[in-house]
Length: 234
Image (cartoon, rainbow, N blue to C red):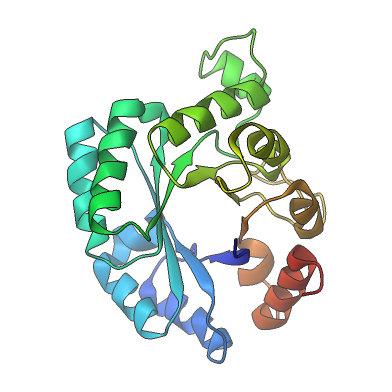
């Protein structure tokens, strides 16, 4: 399975995002377009990035009633992105109807289920989300991952810390995309964080990296260093 670093384009406008991508004019990279940028610019930003030859993870975390989710998935397929995601908390019927659309119309599209956001820790999960106090966060992530696989999604979004348990129980081919990546173990709004080399050792398939690259003085140099750390010098 191909492994890669996905750069999170968490920018407020297409002008800023496309100006940033000028740093990568000789590189074809994988980027993540999330809510902030997509809600501001709409499908046009996807088209512009695709013209540059980059792959796109469209990170909208769809979560709605099954019929609405199915309709949204039909629309997203038309955008020619490479990866999309859904909140597993939406339930098996919602996930299954979305995956059926993808598997029948664009089976090469990677579909991911979002388990627990990396800003969520055990305390938040129990006290705010009111999820079973008898279960650890790792247990809940595994339960969610099993639901995603039953619904025929390609994989999940989770912390790299949870990857070994996911791979052990669901197989090496079940894709894990892991945000919360930092060069050093500092935390901000992310609570479950690891370094690129730790993510490699834990078995992540893709890592999502935002600020360490987008805020760097030399984004291309930082990207290459992170990719080397993640791929182990390949």
